[in-house]
Image (cartoon, rainbow, N blue to C red):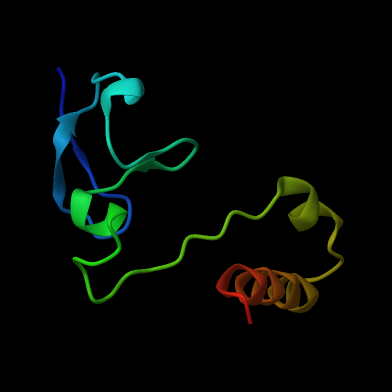
Length: 82
């Protein structure tokens, strides 16, 4: 079976199938998955979401959930240039 990939941000079907090699795709984000062309071009969906990757060590070494939330929020602000 070779299912169609869905966009990791908006959930629509993309033009690619699961077994298509990533070197021949547009909008594939290694470690995250496939984006549709609209999300890849950042102009097709009004409700674009920012995906933030948090290192496992950050999660394990932050003493409590409240502090972890602050760390994640700071990463978000850095990513957005704020």
